[in-house]
Image (cartoon, rainbow, N blue to C red; front, side):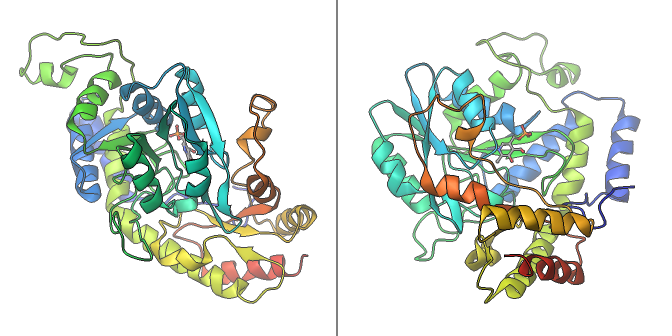
Length: 383
Ligand SMILES: Cc1ncc(COP(=O)(O)O)c(C=O)c1O
């Protein structure tokens, strides 16, 4: 049994996932096959995207995105430092340089397009915004910056699966799905995500030239898959370019399909819970809620509050723990990890402040309103 009475997140798994796993076992086909193909088609339909390729993780998706667009040594990739480290790691492994930009504000911790504009140089090859907690970055501005300068826009949409972009002035790309706005979108199905299958991811694009490369790079640069050969549709294959093994298997794809069917309903419940948090935090002079004004457009991946100070956050973590309520922190600034510290000549004051005060609170479709009320009561007593 979990030590937590109220954990951060709980998987929405049941008979649908059990049946999906059973279906694959009965099929006796485990590697990429009909479940993967169906998962890709269903995901592409949700995204209104031309192409979706299932991959083994979002890290693999980010690596493929960077590699397929020819980013390499000498190139710069602008991204936020409030992020999981995958985009920065893949940028570095491709030989390019991550350039970190500050966030818009403490309650809008996504990359600031005004800073991005200042950081663009002739070496800038790509921008990788991350839709923090399921709240989209300022995509109208970022899209405009990228299209006017021929810069690739790669969306780290790991938190934002199932969310649509809302521009307050309804400018394009208003209404498009997260991950289908830029050139490439990347998604994670890691165990704690809104759509979870343990390990797994998806890469989405509307560009045929990129899609062709992604499909081959995902599987060693091969022109034909084992499934196509098994089906008798192809006898042999060629290796058109050196590639990777970033394939997803049938079991994970089947779990992903079961989860995809529940996704939008789950996201709606998450938004209702976010609204409850927002109402309970309202008018508190010390605590604020991140993206409080954008609840109805969020995928509801994370519930993040901002403590009045770093000390107050520490006290809050302890007070929650006393009541066996789990909390977390998304994210430390990448610049402060020992493997990154001192390597980048940048100071990001908002990023630094945010990382010292943000606290992630429980949020999942099974959370109860009374539990939200209890959590906020505990926090409001700390300042
Ligand atoms: C924002 C973000 N980007 C990338 C990743 C990497 O995803 P994966 O674990 O599927 O490689 C994660 C996963 O936690 C994430 O939250």
